[in-house]
Length: 349
Length: 286
Image (cartoon, rainbow over all chains, first blue to last red; front, side, top):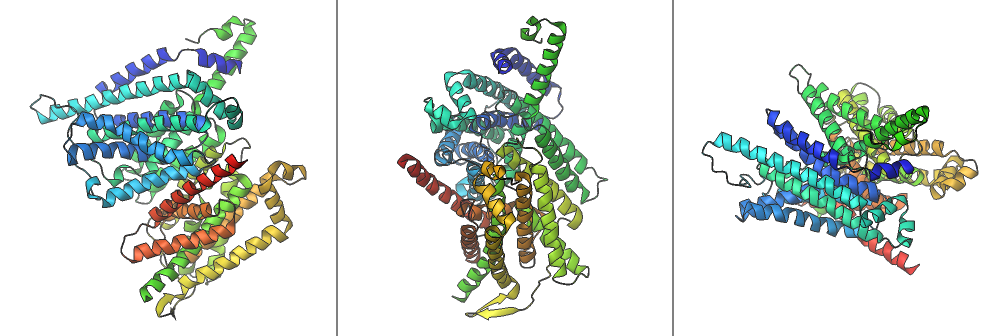
């Protein structure tokens, strides 16, 4: 307990600044930004999801639903209604939050896995609606989403790559905001309430924590992040169709959150990077020209499944808590050896 | 009218299979509180394996039986991984089964390829019911499902193992105090889940096109049927599955489109939301 308190007390801001700098330098040296953008988008969704799962103890397996709502908002506002792109970007998280509140209000009362399947349901319904409703693109999707900002550059190629860089920078800013917000939420009075929830719901309730309200707040916050990611993705790619939000991707978000370690500040980011890179590697391997037709998907699914199962069975708490605990044990052992208790409380840097 | 009856009958067949998959969810969840995503994977494995065995010369009956037993063994394997550690939280267990779904998908693709398995009906030919021509194979699913549910009921009420599993489901700690091995009961539940999924797969593979990618849609429909049964009652799960199958086939039949999974999901959401209110009212009354 003492250790946990100390870890929490240490300010995460130096690390956040370091991550921001790295995240802003990386795109300048990358030849192609799309994978990096996808990684950032996943990371933002997962930071929110990790916060929610860590404290509500429930998985939301259809987080892509809120990404889809954000993307649809942008598609419908800009292409169908010719409204300003910035207005669409502002409204996207609001709509995502509204949908989250609507589904969370009844389902968060239920214990167990009901919310997980409830959110999958919403995702598949959004997909089905995108397939039949003309306003949502009726299966063809919505193409030609205008850029967020009009750049005064003549050359189309330069303009496009600069635009993509701008979206990446916005995504980095969003990720940093998500990290800071998560940290603030966890260390606030409200955060103490939801931490109590994670321990025991009835104990928290009897201490005056509004159980449903607290869970709903975190769920809606996670949906806001997802909605923003959807909007940003719609501008980046710049099209959306029902296949843009496959259920597999939503499963991935949950997998990333758990592999990183739910309810920790860095778990979401670490999980998103680790799983994202694993999937990319498997994909590259599977699509090698010398790979036999059946071996490609086999390798991809088996690799993904096996790594997932191994990590979850041997590190059910996730990478970040497991590594942090190992690190704490090591430094504790070292300080016992040197018989100097001051070393324990000294920062590692 | 004839068309209507055709759709209802084929819906009952599909629904009975969902009920079998769903009852696997129920039995595993009752004993271990784990929602096992791999429930649909067993059906794919058994369905495609039976087709492969029979097309390569194994006689009918033997091929199907072997396929179901392999599915049961797969269930035992999934259980062994999921229950490998005591302290796994429920949603981590859910994700472990999801990881095993991917592994299972890889195995199914490796063994059977990515295309649907060739259809080898156990019963060929068709029959007229109220003017609607129906294949025997589709009709076969419902009575077999009823028999299986009957056997399950007897198993849980009359046999020692079955009663021990029921005891574990109602109070794990008390069951452990009287000497029931929780891990063994959990493994048995997973194995039964595998058998049930396997039976569903073997029965529907000849009339439905089953490919390795049918795993998660089947699991979702089965889970919805299980939600009808509150994840604890096999008989309500049977009703739920039948209802789901009929509604889905009617929608598809009358040209609304193939929305079987979506229908399942809307129904599931409605049930969950309605039940949320009811549960709340109960808690407030206390």
